Image (cartoon, rainbow, N blue to C red; front, side):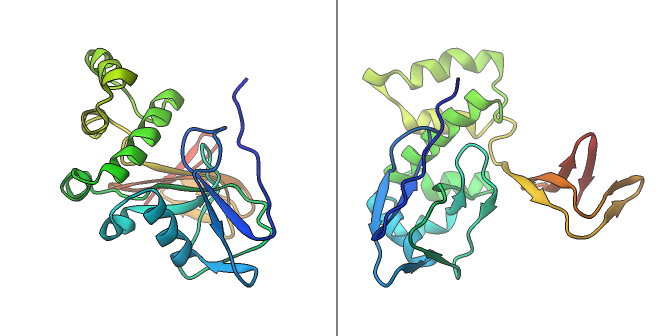
Length: 206
């Protein structure tokens, strides 16, 4: 049975997690006045994880870890006590730009490595058979090669994809012969190619 992350509500702190699911919070942030702006929270977390601040735009705060249900806007406030599981995750869809910007950022590469490992285990990244041995070699604890691991994952299907689950359709959506009705639940899949709403066997591509 998979280990699930447990919420850690606190009167004076907000916890932020990274992958894998079930781990302890990566960062605990002191909060004054019972609330914090998400832009400020993201900046604090990025600094704590030793990610270059200029690369902050490549990451986002999400509710949930393995199955996020929403992305927090930078202009939103999070209030205490916070019962949500808040995670920092990759929010980058341009792999070429990501390689250029994050290739020398050790903090960012570590976060991408953790997320890529989780994405492979969950089947979100489709690993080519010939790449299995290399991925195992790059992830050996004694000779960990996070950059090479991430670069190999960047060449695989599903890498630059984000899935937001449990979306509620507020208005009927119809395209060609497919339709999502108001009130139904759907999964939103975002990638560089666009976005897809999936509900049961029905899919709408935008």
